[in-house]
Amino acid sequence: MADIDRVLRSNLKLRHLQLLVALDEFRHLGRAAEFLSVTQPAVSKTLAEIERMFELSLFDRSTRGTEPTPYGAAVVRFARSVLADYGRTRDEIASVASGAAGRTSVGCMVVAMPVLLTRAVALLKAQSAQSTVLVEEGDLTRLLPRLRVGELDLFVGRLEPGYAAPDLATEALYEEPMRVVARPDHPLARQVRLTWSDLAREPWVVPPPWASSRIKLHQMFYKHGLNPPADLIESASFLATLSFVRDRAALGFLAQQVALHFEREGLLKVLPIKVPIELPPVGIITLRTRVNTPSSAQLIRCLREVANELVSGQ
Image (cartoon, rainbow, N blue to C red):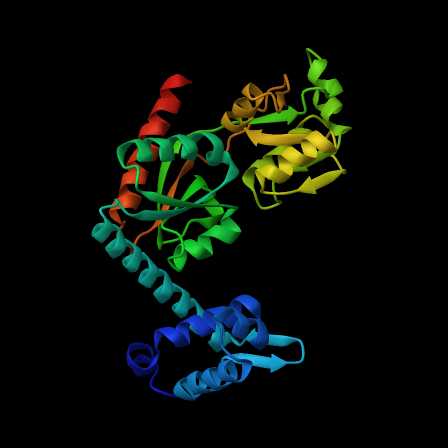
């Protein structure tokens, strides 16, 4: 095996890192070559050059495409981290040179998107109109790996205890209960009183199985001597939830702020039934070893300010 420290510090070039990430994204030499605007033989030659540096096989090639080996997966994580830091530094320098206030990238769960993050970004823009915010919606399973390699600066959502780790810094902002929603013309939306038995007979669109809100929802049915609904669609996407609630007449399970926001917009109806469950708070996750950029620090301050307003208004 080669001197890995020497390879990582001195031998790998930016083009090598870009190629490794492209191969991991597309898992195909031809598609990676097309993305990088080079020929497929050039991709093969460069990959062979990188593997000679490490004296390791980084990708398995087959007729189905390319797949990173365990060694390759580790090197790809390194490549993603370096490229993310490179992009962050480039953007920060360009922002200073142009007089803009910088750029930040945030991963956000549905629970925080339409109220907390939207208001925080509006507050940030009021203070610094030229700041750029890249927002990616998703769940912890998809967004935390991107936070760790530097492709996201911070995460906003439920602080699920199962994802706590020494490399992550967490800050709780407020508690957020859940509500059951339906489309405004759903038969249950016209009832004054509902029971869990009424809800058990309906189709649902629910959070993914790992989410604490999903687990607690099932427990509520068991608590009332009922089996959880069998007709389910699972999604962490608000757009998917809204689409199935409206087009399939399914019931949805949303955070209270989200549900009330879209009820005011006339898109949903919050059903008159209490959901007395305890859930992890909504908060912020950052990487302990990474210093926040000025824009990220400013957005975090805005998130705190909006969170305080939400708590005061409850």
